[in-house]
Image 1 (spheres, one colour):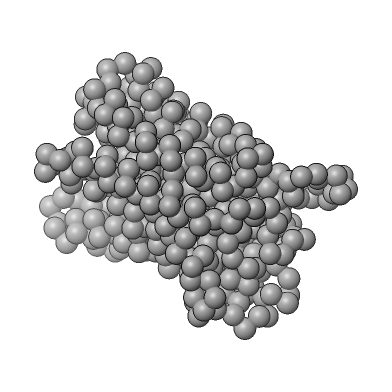
Image 2: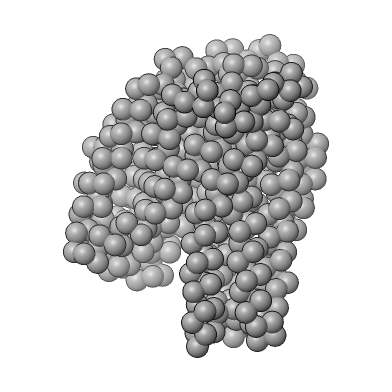
Length: 429
């Protein structure tokens, strides 16, 4: 595919649009993960353990925010993007994330507010969950519509570059603070700093997103089906189910080898927490860097072939890789094995947003992508850790490996349903 028909100005405009869209994605995920990494420091300030009601609010809040809000966010922002434009949806989602972070940064503690403190923390987390649930579908849609023809895979891969980048930056900020501040300072006020950083970064991203050009046309936004569940399921149920099918496996294996892996190295392989953190930071950095390479590969071999390779390799290698990691002693070997697994996952992550966006016409694209992703991600990705740890406590840890393998086989079968050549979206600017 040639890209020669783009003028220099048009190319740089589109590249700037990719930067603007993905900058917000980085901020969203940074803010979302900072909460997880800082929780150990601020939990006592909001959840004194002698109050059982507060403890319950804590568990319910973390659960509800992470899971329930994502599909709702996918639906609300998908509808917004299809009816009122991608740009508006992108700006509102990053503004909400900014508000959520700022709220957490400024929250009075339990000592001064009583039970209102954890209730407000829960509210901030719900706002963040909504925002992150809406971010994925709109970013994937926007980036697929603005990417240069013939290089769609390469440009779309930056969605995951920034998603993983957000995760890494969150770890980095916490590590820097651990070097600069004492444990007591971190517990007293230091944990607030990353949330302030996140809120400021969100404002910078908002400025970048303000200058984006809109990729949906007035005609598709006025369509009676635009952004409606009815419009989505009337003609696109098969596409929706296909996206659900491979996102379930994709989310599960992604969370297995990213967020759960740290606990797995400590709990199952018996590695020290510090070593496990180093291994995972290195592996995630490599994972981030290879995304554009796998995106470029998909431009060469086709999206469908990338997805089939992902399904096939995931099915064949999950059990051997997890079995090998179970008995791993050297951090270097653990790094190599996890990196191998993440390279297999990269066949999917580098183009996942694009493959989903290409399944739907513009009037229901953001809704189709956002909702299918959020539902599959909440059900299979978010629960990966619970299922793995649950089976481990039952003494059936190996069953989890086969569960992931089965989901990968399903992802392979659903990938067979992908169109042979999906280079052009239904509507290209």
